[in-house]
Image (cartoon, rainbow, N blue to C red; front, side, top):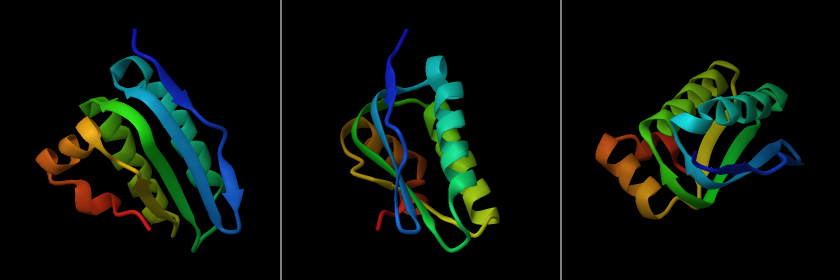
Length: 106
């Protein structure tokens, strides 16, 4: 079973940051879904949810699907959703799937 660590969301002004570490895959997609959904629900219209992926070492398609879902819900709520610090295998996954531009940091 893979391990994903989800940090407690930190709010600074209108931005909520969630830190991820480890692997985002099918084994923990429910945990990732819950964390991202919660952050997006707490964000105010016009605000942002930033997901810090600097310590995310692996992301499978199940993790990418959770990012895409959270981005859609955020967009529908008028909230910006971005991934930051993406590197290594997760960055390559975003490049290969053509989704990197959807998650531009800021």
